[in-house]
Image (cartoon, rainbow over all chains, first blue to last red; front, side, top):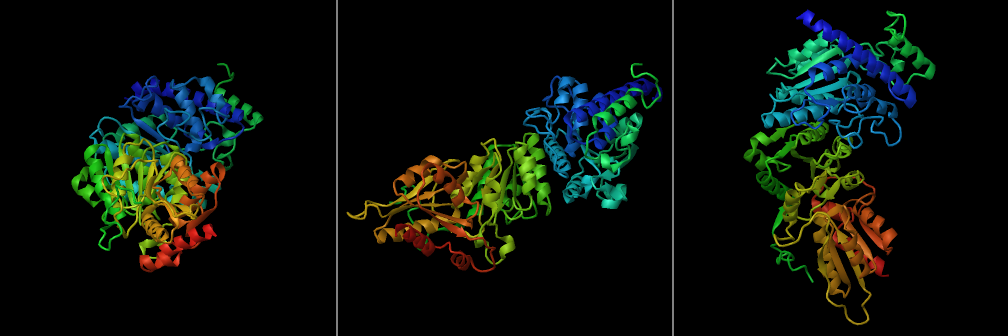
Length: 288
Length: 332
């Protein structure tokens, strides 16, 4: 099985790297936005759109598609970039991020980009919406037909509403729901365990009747396996706690909470793109 | 004279009284029968917020949320994304009170046609006291783009509003009250979302008193007080038009302006803060399109307290005599 995946894994890693480059280009062109979260989640978005999700970029409103709810809307550069690479809209449009009348609003808005499953930005409400979708499908006995994925941050677990949603999903045994927590340990003001400790995080979710899977959020195989595993759990919703490195792929940005909410300067972006294009110095020329 | 379709016994002592919220409960069952996509979500107030009958009839389409109003709003948004038409019911103080941002972002900004039912509005909630008396909810909801705001005057109108709002592909807020309210309207009384109805218009005034008249625009249970005031005014040869403004947003500017043109004065009556409420909506319209002197009946920047509904309505200056006083102030 491992060998079968090897080829796909290399392809996914290449795509994730391209997506990271686009994120840097988008942010430096916009002159504002968030850097750490989008880079940190690029691998998970890549696996979802290029391996796991049932979707069709040429038919974005296909009824039986899986639903992807992005709760922490501020990491939308990675959503937009991945959608563009998956063929939802031209990659050239990515550079309109945060500009007047752009479909790519600073935080996702369905009015501007109707193929989004939801508008988001204010933290803590995405999981509730995903729970609503999963509940509706359970009522209609469509819970075997399509799955609901909610991508959320660790910082937004400070919001009480997040836990209201966690409780309701556990109560209703929503096996068609998968939450992915980007456990990157940073939020705007600092490290999560300094600002508002979340540990023991997996025990918390388990206590609310969720099936918990912890993974390395940069290991393509672990990411893909976790999503497959979640399909075998029938009595509970699944949460994948994905340990990620904020700013992943650019040494300068990694593990530093100050990169949560700012874009790179043109000079920093140039350096970052060089690093991504040479895979961190593993290959010599940017053009290889 | 009284609108011919209204309850004939309206001014009788034995006029039937039913809580406005009951009409919602009945309407919800009818809405559920008519449309299989209708679902109801309640935050641990199923009986009080009148969702019990729906729950018993459609157990599979009822979601018990527990005491979690923020989740209530956003879960409904998610259900609506899958084609459901969710009604979310709680006390107005908690929904849209506590969960205002969730309503703004996950329902209205997201363009999801969730129906928000706020029971226990106004000081007439009574003994529970100020924490449970929502007198800010009209302001909170009408300020959000896309939201339709309805404040039915009695149980019959609340039932019609509940059934009608399913057909509207937009978020809707329906404001209900706890206390028994005289049943003013009948099955024959017109109700259309976005349309105000004239409930009363006095007969011709005697010679020399032609300009002694006023338009009283009221919403919710206090429409009854406005009708009582109109009757008293008639006895004093003061003419009036009483408008039942049950849809506060979108505002029926045409009916309002036409009624005001015939009197040249306005008193607005609502069980809500004067700031930002129905009277403010009327003033926003008239001050730019047909400016006339206006008096506002409502709560004046205060919180409610415990008491009987009658005591509280009188204490906060929203009774019949307060309406009469306001009218006379305009006539001086």
